[in-house]
Length: 167
Image (cartoon, rainbow, N blue to C red):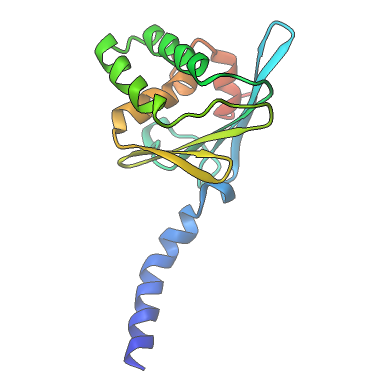
């Protein structure tokens, strides 16, 4: 009986947090956007949060879901990421350090693959579909990665507006 009481108390303490946040797959979509280059669709993307709203000041528990519509080699993903970070003003030394982390996590992607990045207090987690493929243990890096899409200085302002639900 005592064990049941302890279990119930723990469940009551944990349950509201777990229900409020839940797994990223159950979070509502804040916004959706498609990246095109000329006539080609590169990827479809979604931004998800536990509340279904985006707040730049509360970026914990944010999931960026990218579904690729083309095959893209990992090296091309890394080069594009470096290019975007450079345009956002990330210093070269940080970019190089962070690209090594991503090189150890990212696969080549094929049409239909989904790469998901879920930000949390200590950094972020990368998924390929629903499988964890790597961890980022640097919150600054996690924020810089999301900044490619969510920063007000992004190279893709219309995509940002759609993702954060402003269109």
